[in-house]
Amino acid sequence: MRIPSAIAAIFLLAASSIAVRAELAVSANDGKQLREGDPTPVTPDSVSVIDLGQYPPKVIGDVKVPAAMIGPPAAVAIGPGEKYAIVTASQKLASAGSTDLVLADTVSVIDLTTPSAPKVVQTVAAGPGASGVSINKAGTLALVASTGDDAISVFSISGNRLTPAGKVQLDAKARPTDVVFSPDGHKAYAIAQGASKIVELAVNGTSVTRTGVEVAPGRQPYGAVITPDGAYAINTNLGGALDAAPPEPGRKGPRIGSISMTDLATHKVVASVPVGQTPEHVALSADGRYAAVVVANGTASARSDPKFATVLGILRIFSVGKGTLTEVAKADTGHWCQGATFSNNGRLVLLQCATEREIEVFRFSGTSLTQDKSATMTFESRPGSIATLRSR
Image (cartoon, rainbow, N blue to C red; front, side):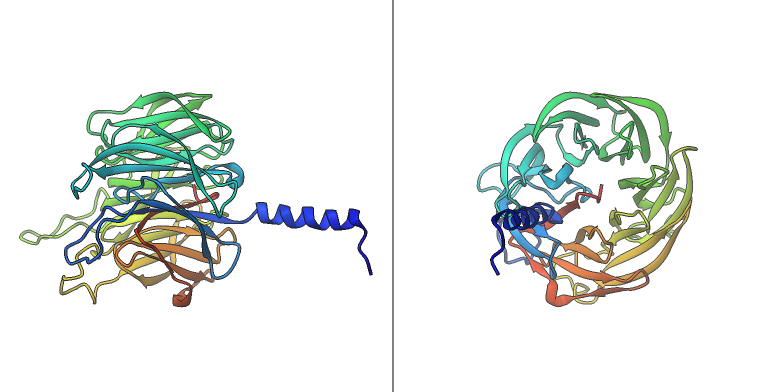
């Protein structure tokens, strides 16, 4: 039976709409970070586009662009409609042929209109050490935290183009590593690692100012997310809780890191949970019910380290309640792992492991994490930051 041309056109339009709405993840990959005994030389920085709408997830596009894995794995943000991504680079090579690294201020805009062929459409400067980046839900404003000038850079957005719109200067040595918008876009929160504070910002159009509210969630806060209802901020603390006991006298070693939950209405820390050495990243599921925490667990050492084969990273999943964080699952991971992100339905977690230059894929049931090793994706450079549209 012949299908009338009008009906066929409707089918084609529907198929096209489905393709446009593909669920994407964007991974920023750093080729500059070398380790003793690593046979791989410096490789190009890049950004990879991953299709999460199929299983196993698959890299469908790549583009060479400055990226850096030093700093929280929040150096990627995806704009509304998955039409573009913003990627920051906190470091660059000091010169051609050198392996020395210096602070960078690079912010790149990547067109995702054709996900299989991403392209860089703009490069602008933020402050030195450009790290965490966030886009408001309206897609009209972007904020970038810069460690080198203790500031938050503000950019207005039109289409997929950025225009500098000022800076918010924080206190000297605040060293902001991340910044996140509230869901309604009227507030933002800068993570001042050097000051061990979360600094509240007021947002009015392109005007971003400090409100005077600051919260001390723990030692050396690093990265953060805001729950979808805007009620809580959840952040990682590299140095652990403020009241955590220091190492025993005569013993060396890093503190046990933690995650904290802050009530944004009362500005009080309502939960604090120790998670292990170096909590690199916290990511929320799209519905806000779960938080994934990436714990490096001392695995950033060189492959020649005698403990390399026996010490693994940890991926921990917490149920997010009203003022509570309750662990529901955890799994061993690869080494020097960085960013994580949930699929939109919350059933998959992608985890970047920099040493192996892989993204590991985990199935999450709500109570268990199971790695599917056959779904692992490999990369030329070290995956260091990752985002989906709903992860920030």
